[in-house]
Length: 435
Picture 1: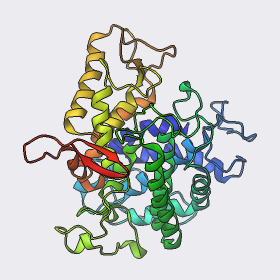
Picture 2 (picture 1 turned 180 degrees about the horizontal axis):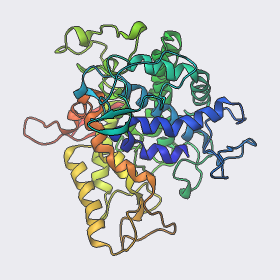
Picture 3 (picture 1 turned 180 degrees about the vertical axis):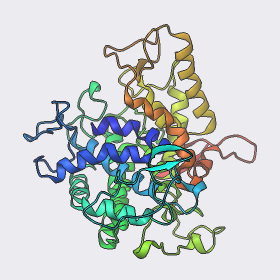
């Protein structure tokens, strides 16, 4: 199920990105076979385990924007995980272990199991994952095989993500809703991700096309999705007075989009060029001098700041509620959201989750759905020990992302004024106002 793999994928990126590839490959292969009739990404591999029969009737659970955005974000995350110049820059400490040979045969998998090794007396170990020798070639081989699908999913987002129709997000227990701010952001980030997936196969025309669309959409998204007083993101564009945990903002940082226009430009982590060489950018030639475009970050940094301040204001006894409709929360999304807040807010949210673990009484495994007030119990559904708790690795994954520079790129969240007071920010007419 794509929308279950997505909240779990920080765990796989941190431990072994190969496992994430192995989870996505069956879904991609099934959709490449032509057995799934819809233009958007399939929700899951079917209801007839262990037979992966899919949904030939196209009647899988309907959350099309969710699944397209998820798989595109995870696709670029995998591409990025393959490309690193030194062992220390790898997203996982285990990625660089093993041999570095590359199989150019287009008929074989980019992630073949045929290279089993013996190291330190242990048999059955994988070869290395990406790296300077084979990473860009491996990424090109993987993306090329299914490129038409990546474009198909992205084109679906281009048509429908800016103003989402009435549909479910991954939080299906909350019911369908139109014009969801957080869902629209995921789709826009998916389009942006496709611009860099296209670069992986040297399709610079597609890269430019999707980049331009995503940049146009993110400006409109901010106009539609931020509250009138500029203090927070709304749950839905038309739902004035509402608010949401903007957990999809995490992908903007994980994919290094937040570094654009800074001295640590994201292009150095995701742009792949012919023969595996990347072009020099202004930040490459002079790392002390940021590019002069004037734009910093794909999602404006002011959005990060207002959300960080807002979470501090709405946090409850046992954590950060999912949105303004209820007091329940999802622990995976709490970690996603907290990972891209200021250090103080991050610590407060984590302490609240720890308080829930320590104070509430249960003999059940760690849940990803619980109430943030009262007894901290379950709001109907009893979710227990689900794979989505891989999202609890969100902080660890960011610490290794972007060649180890992802968290440095969030330093603006902890800026202080001349009096040593942390800056807080709201938006006024699209302009930032420091308080």
